[in-house]
Figure 1 (cartoon, rainbow, N blue to C red):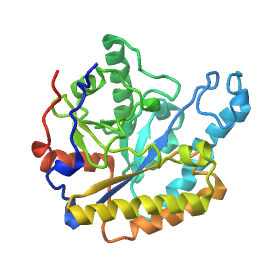
Figure 2 (cartoon, rainbow, N blue to C red):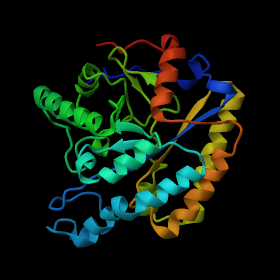
Figure 3 (cartoon, rainbow, N blue to C red):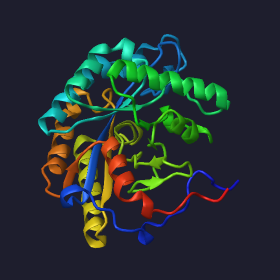
Length: 297
């Protein structure tokens, strides 16, 4: 079938994108704060026990995130003056209220990330999905005091109706489509895609590829340097997300490498340290009218 969710738009044919104060790179940290059900399989470091219930090996690894890792990561973000863009499972609101309070104190941005990381809405019928999304959004608003503006599906999953349903709930961007270095409009009026870098995620690098800390730092720096070079040559800004999971990057032996990578980026004069909310808002305000229209139906 034809793609009716968003149009094709080559990066080389767009109007220049300008970030505040002449910055070249809009940088945000996508911090995944998630809840996993104890009796269902999910992201695993050792597949051999993933089907067991309970599965202490894999569940314990994931559970390190809200118990320990999140606090280590928060301290590192604070050191570099970075507000997290939190990809928040709504189950976190009632199960880990201390994390919500810590985020409120730091003025973190809250992005709806489903109910938990075991439930995927792919395959849901529209009425079922509408009810599901409504519960997620309203729970996050109740817990954080702020209605989320953005969406990241657990497992980066959607249905063909997700953008329309989210727009009806007052959201205006999604992060599920990691296909660009700039925001772009979706086919639903008022809805945008904001970049989310799957390959720059800690799960992919440390768990999927078994990279070392120094290799992680080199890759993050290489990503920044290349995007900066392209932004300067074209006169058009780029977005650099850094995707983190507290149960991965929050491990003690990895902390100094996150610190080193963030020091390189946060200290660069071409960087706009921001959130995915602010990127979407700036794009909608300054550039969306010049972007290609919706894809043909």
